[in-house]
Every structure is written in C-alpha cells, then in structure tokens.
Image (tube, rainbow, N blue to C red):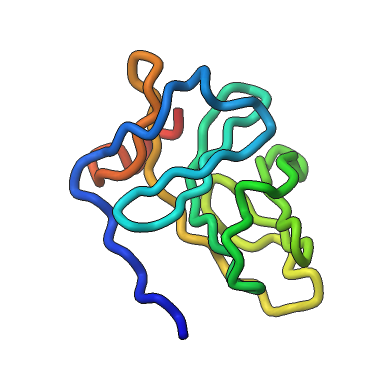
Length: 126
C-alpha cells in the first residue's frame, strides 16, 4: 500500500539551525507530513528532497552518500545505489532500473535557521 503524497506547507517551516547540519551528511525533518532529507554540502549549500527511496520504499535517502558528479551535487541511495541530483531530484543513474525522480523541496537559510517549504522560496537554495 502506497501512501498518498503529502502537500507542501503554504509557509516555510523551520526545521533546524544550520549549525545542526553536518556537511556531507543528511538529516531528516517532518515537513507537511512527509519525511524530508535535508543535506548540507561541503560548500555550505542546503538541499531538501523526499527521504523515501522510490526503488525500495524505505525512508533512507538522508543516510545516502553525498558527493558530486562533475559540478552536480548528488546523493546516492544506500540501498540500491541510484544517484540523484540534489538540486532537481532528477535520477542521474538508475543503477540498472528506469530512472525515478525524487521530489525536491524549497529550502533557504535565514539568520542561521534552515527553512523548508513555502512557494515563495522555491528558487532560493541556501
């Protein structure tokens, strides 16, 4: 049984302080009823995407390997090793399966607080 997608909140939700996020590691926050993987890269940018791996159904994306492919910041699923672009959620390598994208969430850092959701910040990535 697959859960229905949850709606994004109308307003951004404060999920943590930027200093709570360890570079190159993921964390998880509950935003609008969905588990969201929050990832801070080595250059200090923060990204948010669904934590649910569409291939296994497990809530594990935040535990994936964070890195890059060229100039593209990525996360690799710890389960079956698919690779996603942190900026867009596009699957860059389906690891032998048809590519399935992850939903991304607007994220912004304001006065040291990480905010996720809200349409008004959709193009601001940290």
